[in-house]
Length: 349
Image (cartoon, rainbow, N blue to C red):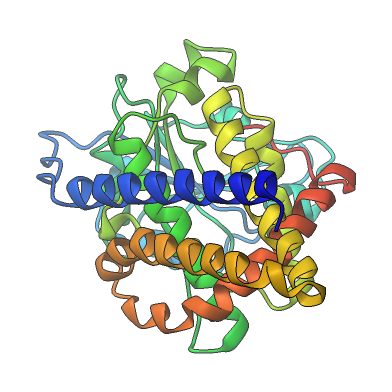
């Protein structure tokens, strides 16, 4: 292997290992923090449930069953057209079918911009959760108690229901690594990109910042287990690559150079590893340094994922670390190219 290539490989893996170790320690310290105290008076909350206009969706019923004062809770169900119909669900929480996007398709209803949702919300706090997500009963309280004017955006964890199947396990393990890095980086003050699924916004703070750039810079992440939303896994290899491409696109387009650097550096590392692996098949001299680099990257990801796996009771996923690493080395370079050429729904924060 040429010395310049070896030097680049060592540098990339070493930097990644240091960042993974620092993020892992940050996540451990974050989860050991004292939980946020209960509020003397719970604020009014509007939960955006992207169910494509179906107010009888199981997700809506989950929200109604959450442990939160029903008189302080409303559920917003996006719908096409100028619809604004309100009724009270069986559990007592108000449910409103509202139009937050004009002439929306079903796909866009499932990715409602939070800035649009805050304009029609009656609550002081707006929460958004993914379609087909599963939430614990304490989800609303856990997210709300951390959302203040000083921390106007709080992103919560999403974990993947893997059902012990191969591709879902790989998806779930990759998600754990992302949670470990996000939780650790947020704890030490490194800017993070708030997720679009499980996120909370303080309405007054949002309305006082018409440009979302300042809001994003104030985003924080909570690793609390009772704030975690479980989501379905990908169903195919193509869907996995598509998710990774959207993840890269959103972070490269972020306003923070740190977030852009995280995404770009991650793609560069996996692309270099992928290229070296291809060359190593034909050239024996490349095999040993490439294998050592892969093992080093695998060790860093194990360190990064272990605290999150313990915290979210998914430690068994670490048995799949080897196929997950090989899959990442193969899929992430493809996802980076796909992120440049593919057309994704434009979702505002």
